[in-house]
Image (spheres, one colour):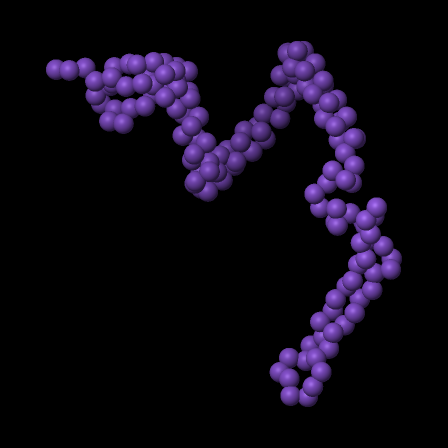
Length: 145
């Protein structure tokens, strides 16, 4: 009987196929099996809303029962604290350098709304119209620098 082989999708080694696994793509190495599981979970989260809800609920339940986990983790791992502090300082610095010109929705900023905006009402003209409600329109002048 001929040995059937395949190339592992993770480590790219050529290995002998397990005859009990019909569409085998990953070898039995621990790292490759973890990669297979991660891929499955990523796809499941994107496609299955029930799975996503159940995962979120189980994470919230775990967090409620292990409220001190991160406090203990940080106290046991000073390198983690140091790295996290450095990354947070970089995020804070980047956030403080953000200006209105960097934002995508500039029109949502209050500084672009000035007090000269006016609301106009548009009425239908005529007696035989079915819809006679007024349409309110707010005109907001936006100036460029």
